[in-house]
Length: 334
Image 1 (cartoon, rainbow, N blue to C red):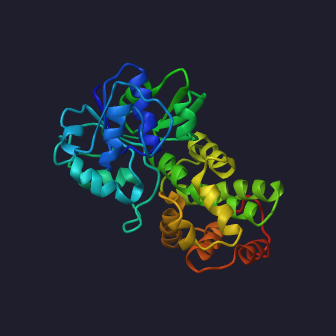
Image 2: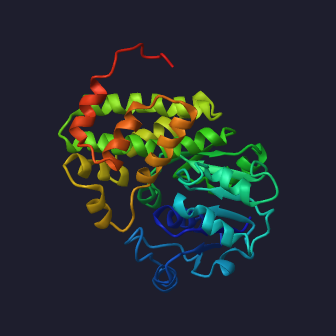
C-alpha cells in the first residue's frame, strides 16, 4: 500500500517518518515549499519537528499532484479548517476510490461537519466504505522520539481498519481498531476545548483539584454531545476520549493547554494568536462545538464558559465563579 501524507506539520511529518522508518516509500505534501525543500535537502523539517532527522524514504513535495497521483492510500494531516479545501485539490488528481485516513482533529466551523462527513460530501462513494479516522493521545514529538504510545483507528470497514492498523503499528505505536467513527473524531476534537479550560485554570493559579474536576466533568460533557450525535459511550472513555483528554489537558507539549494558561494569566486571545505560528485547534473547535451544543440542546457548561472567555472577552476568573455557582445536581443526571 503506497501512502501519501497530506500535510507536513508536526503530526503529518511524524506519521510520514514512522512509515519511512518501516521501510515504506512515502510521499509527503507540504504547503510551504521551504519545508519540502528542507526535508529533501537536509532530511529535516525546518518548521516542524525541528532537530529530528527524518527517514530517507520520505520524498517531500509542494506539488499536490505529484504527491498523490500514484498513492494507494491518502493520509490527511491538515488543520481542520483547511481540510475541505485541500481534499478538493487532492481529488483532482487522485481517484475517488482511493482509501483515505483522516489524522485531522476538529470540526468545520461553517458546516459543523466532522472530517468523515466532509469526505463523504466530496466523493461519490460512501466515506464509511474505505475511510478511517486516526486519533488518540499522541504528541507528534514523542511519537517521533519512539516513545511507546497508543491510538485508535476507526472505520466502518473492519478489514480496512485492520489494514491501516497494520500499516502504522510499530514497536513504539500500538493501534486499536474501533467502528465508532463519530465518537473517535469527536473525542479528538472536543478534548482540545477542555484542555484550554484546564490551562486557563492553571494560569489563574488554581490547583490539581480543579484540573481533575475539569477533566472529569469535561469528559462528561464530551460524552453527552457525542452520544447525541450517534457515538458510543464507551469510545469517550477510551484512548480517543479520556486518554487524549488527559494528555492534552496536562501535557507540557499541548498547544491548547498552553494557550489556556496564557488566557488565565490575563492575555487576550488576539495577542496570543499573533505571537504563535500555529493557533491551537481548540479555539475554532470551541465555536463549532458551541453551535453544535445549541443545535442538539446539549448542556455543556464548561464549553459555554470557555466560549465566553474566547469570544466575549469574559475574564477567566469570573467564568470559574459562574461554573461553581450553578445549581447542584446528581453526578450522572444526563
